[in-house]
Image (cartoon, rainbow, N blue to C red; front, side):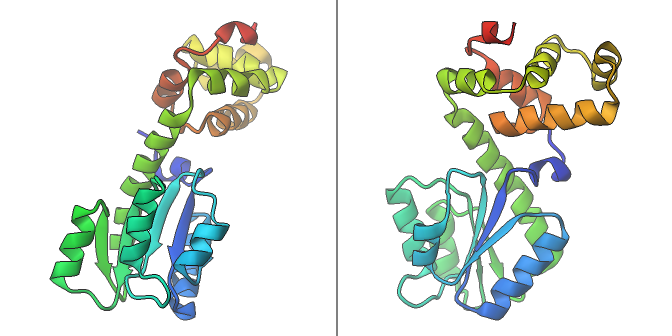
Length: 212
């Protein structure tokens, strides 16, 4: 399983809240923890400015002018935007919480948000998003990604497929382990995976002859 450092790479935590102070505080806290953050003042800003194809999760306020968090959740389902949602609100009631969870939200947290509880909610949400993102890559798309890799990345991809460790790859290619680690992470990022198991699953069915 990917560790927390891994899943921060290539993922984005979105914050949608009309309260400037809340957005700034949550964004600062998450960035200090190593997460990439995008903050939006309204649901419509999120819909028009975000890139939902990038995995991550959505921290969503319930009560906002123009479009509420619940309305955005419904619209996301209609548009098949599959970012995991964690609701964060200072105006919670049991009925609303139950309704959002039944509609697919992963968690419902009260403001002021406990940092530990928030991170514990974010990490599994991002893992779910990453798993879905990897599943979106067709064998044809994976083949395209492999084709566009640098010669060194293709070389390392071949060795990863053979089960060769980073240390052994470094020895075979006369590289430092740090350099190998960097190339491997580039390969994982381009394929939207974050560990060897997911990498092997992702390349299954692709045309691996292009690596030769």
